[in-house]
Image: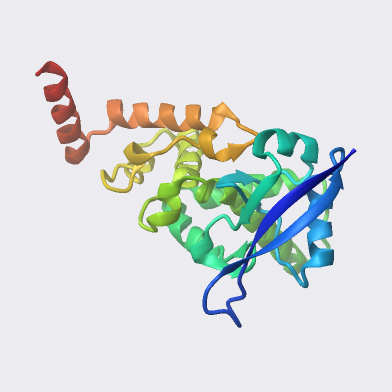
Amino acid sequence: MDKKINLELFRFDVKTDYLPYFAKLIVKINGQKSLLDLLAIVQENVLEYGYNAYGFKINNVVVFDFGLKIEDLIKRFGLEWRIEPLNPHLALKDLIIDVQPFLQKIESLKQVGLDELAQEEVQSVLKDVEFKGLEALDIETQTIKDAFLLSFLPFAYATPLSVENPEYLGEAYFILVASLYAKHKTSEVLETICGLENGIFNAQSLQTYLFPQNPKFDACINELKQIVFERSELPKIQSFKAKLFKKVNF
């Protein structure tokens, strides 16, 4: 059975627009169709509407599985959808955002093993593939490395704090650090997230801002927060602990 969904579509082209605006569109679509099918309809009706594989927000909630059925999305969001990019401040073309700020932010993690982590992902993909030339291997390797890192983009701007404060490390950063700590178990890895203003203790719940919801990401971040609290020997963390204990014992 067809459903009628009222869309408000974020529109912006960095090359031609001074400010973003919203275009309204009513879409009739079968509930068994997918989100990808809906996007195809949008592109048929809105000239050159831009999106990419990293997802976007419906009513302030991140959706990045384009295979989701429309009927399931309607159960979650109703029939009024406000569609926006992951981070409107970084919009380039409609739902497409500039990924460089995210890549630049996680650049510092290369000092504690991020390249090696990405390389392992590359090797797992390429293990059964033979390349005739090193040049081709380099191109494919870099492409897959970038794809691996950008797969964390939906988590990078899910929470309000991650959108509004560019200095905040963000939940995607914390998830990557959790992976690095699981591999290396070093204080150097933990120190990357110990800032009291923009670090792990400011983390917000991802489950609130993702669909479908998945509690494992919050569990991962909360476990990492506990590890930092218990094991970090940095003076600022020790001082933070002392203040908390003082309040508890007051």
